[in-house]
Amino acid sequence: MMKTIGELHKEWLSLQPLRAEYQRRLDRKLMLEFNYNSNHMEGNTLTYGQTKLLFMFGETTGSAKLRDYEEMKAHNVGLELTRREAADAERPLTENFIRELNKTIFVEDFWKTDARQASSYQIHAGVYKTRPNSVVTVTGETFEYASPEETPALMSDLVAWYNATERQNALHPVELAALLHYRYVRIHPFEDGNGRIARLLVNYVLLKNNFPMLIVLSSDKENYLRILHQCDVAVGDNPTDGATATVAQIRPLADYLEKLAIRSLQVAIKAAKGELVDEPDDVDRNLRNQ
Image (tube, rainbow, N blue to C red; front, side, top):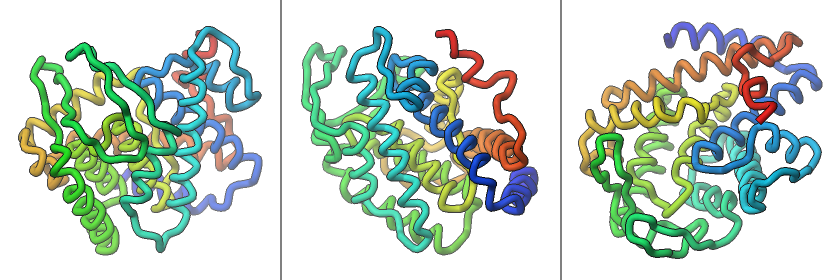
């Protein structure tokens, strides 16, 4: 599969720079798909059609909550921040950038309800968690992430590891993106927004290495979570082990992102050649009437 990615990436680079209209068409498609899917996966109720109207025409028609529109717009600001950060090849990854991403996608502090404990608590945007967080897995078990006390040191180590690995050029960009995604998620440094930040970080790595963005489809959420669970089983439930996982341990996730990267490269190459980038199974076609 890596050979296929290498060949497609080489073709993609050979087509640079794109004509302005082709670049705009591709950027718009990827922007809409990424914002819609990453937010929809986390419970945002906007349809693809509403998302498109919001970004193309500034319209907020429909019965969706105002917060869902604000969340979608804020997430796009986070995407633009990611693009700008990735455009500077010499700038290392920093904790400040990751915290800024979380602060950006939430804009301000807000209250969230914990259904399991029938209580509410305040989410502090851009601030590492101050209370333990966990998730109920597909098997019904409670899976704990890094504790609030462990989180600062683990995040410092994560950033240091990423920058050193990037300098060494030891991993293919897609493998590096997969490993950053997984290690970050196992820390789960914020009280909310960790999935969205993980997917933004994946595209930070790809954009920095001159790849088009990839999209994890919300319609594939169950498979995506199953793959992450497979990695958890291989790595073990100790948060520190999760934060130091190897590519071999998270191979299911790396393979999954490689397939998505191939799809994005194929779409980007079509766009670069002036071809239409809507596909038979395009999310636009599936959701335009919802």
